[in-house]
Image (cartoon, rainbow, N blue to C red):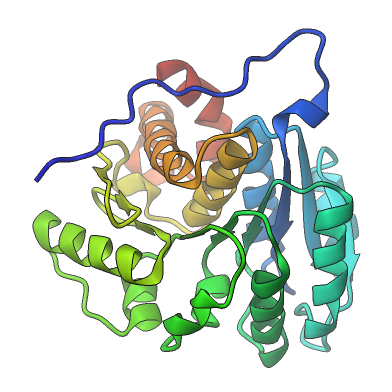
Length: 287
């Protein structure tokens, strides 16, 4: 099996005369009552990845808390249901915001919940957006058993399921070994014309032709929020000009590298998703 080798990370040169508009704008659609941390983690990871601007679209009730924790991201507060989840009625506002504010990449799903309203919201904005999309967590769960609906989109798509999400989304059983996981991931990516990041030990990244099996990372990363960090990281890299496949490869590699650095500091039991973000600058230096 011939695997993709990423070479060197090549992002836009940081010209001292440039400004934030040169380094991409990420739109994060995330969060619901009790799950505001997912929006925070994804947004901060996108910023740490080097994105020039990040807008966090969240239920309006989360705006104050998120602003206090992450003042660096723009906030787009949206209408929410009684349960504290985003509603389908905000889809038009999100699509028009992305066009008006020149969003380069969108990441949808962390902590959204799977209400009927959020399901409709995800489907509508995926159909309406013309920029690459990273779909994760509840953004995937709303398509469980109906993956063919992912074809109703305009733009490149990257999906980032772990084993159980992959099985729910595509209605398949994920094998244990590398060879079986690679074969399955490659077939699904080719069938649905997307970039697939099959998360777990030795994460598989494929666009149906190229395949990368990640070797960074450790068991200490098996904690809530780690996937939200990866989502924001991939989106932040893609916003700076990397193709969606290259952004996913480097996102997986740097995410794992940050986990390895965090373990050296705090041990396998003690690291959190926030530690991954704090270690991202070191991960970029290490490559």
